Image (tube, rainbow, N blue to C red; front, side, top):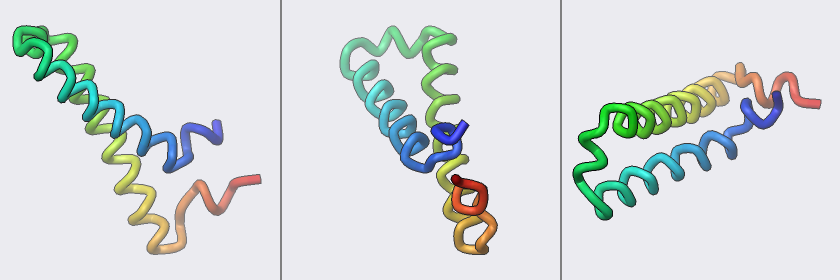
Length: 71
């Protein structure tokens, strides 16, 4: 469970999503017309970005789960 709350994990997921988006768009634009591929990449980027922003906003207030409850 600790890995999912780690900001490093979500940074890696955000980078992976952007790399997938760029890789798919350079390889073939037709692949982005596939709904499943487009939704998967979009969700990966959106969820990772949300978790990173949430982490840093809560960290500024001293409420971050990662730092409060880590072992």
